[in-house]
Image 1 (tube, one colour):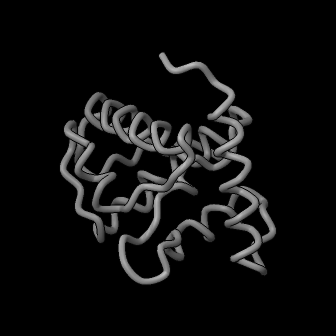
Image 2: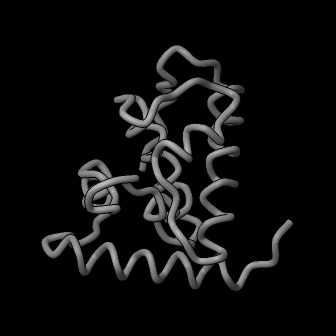
Length: 128
């Protein structure tokens, strides 16, 4: 995925710090293995201000998904889910997955498979 440097008005430094904060929050959940709600995730980000329904969040999570997938650890953002209702990722997650060449026609099966892959990938890694 091409890096586009579109930071929604945030500095490159703060955007990257925010991504590191978000990754750490997602990784901590992937290790145990559990999920994290959008609201919990944005609360863990201090470098920039995002809300759970912020349209910029999709772009932010898309960058993280692409980076982690390219590193061979799967789409880490699979652990980010709705707090209420279906407790699954939003539609943007599946759009990201299709953009990475994934087959998502059966969204439930795709989500379960990717979640399992990410949980296994991070449960094997030693915490820093």
